[in-house]
Image 1 (cartoon, helix red, strand yellow):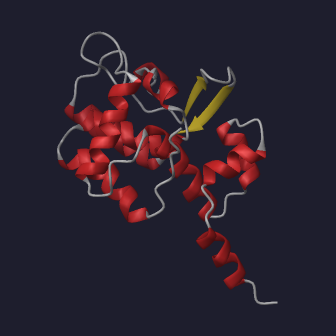
Image 2 (cartoon, rainbow, N blue to C red; image 1 turned 60 degrees about the horizontal axis):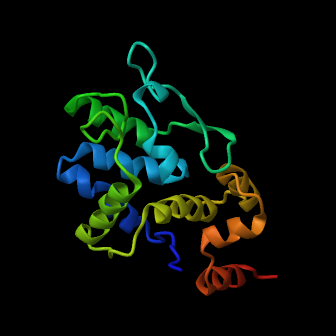
Length: 186
């Protein structure tokens, strides 16, 4: 079984995110930005429709309300500045259809195609090709944790059933533990 890991280096996260922006592939840029900033599973991201994030006048809503496919639970995700910016860029340059991540045939792209988008960005941005959509979900949690978000809150955000699952998501390694020991000066 392959394990996915978060992207730990913030510079690498930015390289990955901007790979498609530089290529003017705005749907793919929006996909990666959404994955990094919502902590949603790719199956939930792909089914998003424009009506989930835009009001009837075309304004970006403050939140996405979604029922998660895996858990069946409703979750409300704040649409942050990064997502807002990516949506605005998309709207300025592309034609809006039903699905945000439209496949051009009246549906949304597949999980496999999304995986290839992320993998190609990782390779093209020079950070490796062992990155998956799930890596981006974990990257959200890792960086939120590093910025001080309590793991119990991340557990709630991820809708995990146990703290043990969230701990695995954070990808805590010896370097992270060493940093804690180094900072404590009692």
